Image (cartoon, rainbow, N blue to C red):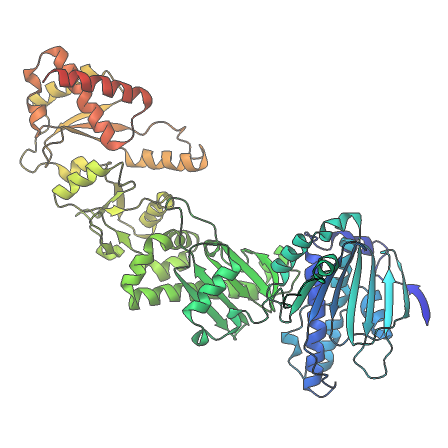
Length: 610
């Protein structure tokens, strides 16, 4: 038998578009062809279940075979195969969907719709993204059918002939083009299979003919599939062990650290959704480390980190989500305008929040042990989604400088609802010590995201103001015994320091503080400093031109050194004033190279006075 005909397309310009630009990433062709094989097997099994086909009890499998010498890549399945008539309908009529016809025909008899992945016709043509010529060799499960061979060089013509195939199923033979030569690399093929077919529902076996021939002289290793057909997310959460969750995490993600904990999603109504979201251990305590959410449809990989399905802040997690309601060829416009996708996104957010609340209420100590790792994710989520904040606000923890974890309602506040915080425990250690010595506590907010979070909290918690520990310590530590700071002695003291330092931009005040042993401290304007912090993160986008935040030198008149300053001659006064300022700066930030040079030099001079 030999027959020739014209491929039927809606437009003469449609075929080259399908051939070259059907997908943004040509690697996806392998996913499409293998997924078609899975569909063929699923259809056959469904027909056997309802008695429409006789079960041959042959284990379902898909073979991917590379022949480097022949420059061919073959994908074979042992599914239901096709008749000559079906080849013409499903292959030559590009826009015709074999999967759609199958579902419509057997919808009331089988649950095949839940496992049918795509559409053979359109997905098949992705093979031409990497091939000059493609052949199909197929034999239908229908008794008495004849095997069929189809081939086309990617033009508008094809050829159908008889085939000598004797086993039901379909083989797609791709003759690789120059553009597809990268797929003659065995490592590349294995990588693509792992990415797109890692969890497809039927066993996939990969063979390179040349590698197999090299091994034929020795003992052949046991044949192993390249995929996992029953991924953990398909199991009921109650049937999964901790070890299984951890092993699955290692299987999917290249992370040397085990996850902190996880959320197993298992939804049947109002949509079908399964998956596992892991909370990874953060390796960088200052930066928010990106996560990775892999999206699947019926165990077929779609893409990573699709924010229309998975909210942006959840991208800090790692995990897998399988949503059969999503098509394989998802587009941003489809996802943005689909109401079901929005429901899925909201539900995922709710499940994450519910899990965190449950851990907080039932395992608070364990929750506290996770906090340093999960707080960037939670804070980012609160900023991006105020509904998420409403669910989380009562379980957001604040670690104090005394090492305690407290909720917002428990954190120490002043009478005027002010919260002191520390952004760097090392740089602000002197301030922390002064506060502790006077029984005043502060919370630690030292992650980069806290620059945004404190502003967000002030917006959400009206009346509360966050003040860094080195911003207004004079008010927190001002002595109750000496209220008048505008004495003649204090004015003289300020004049001495002004003359010695010669910095007309530096404001100097004299106050009696509740601490001794600290001659002076520096405070920085909270608002200006926040603007500068934002500019450092995002460039000069907040209009402050990166001007240095206003600093104020607070001279502690309760300190003995300050009290004795008038006893020294002018030269020694200048030396001591500069040294006191150096110590105050050193307690607040790192010295610049020039400042450090001057500090060392003056330290030697001070020792010479002894």
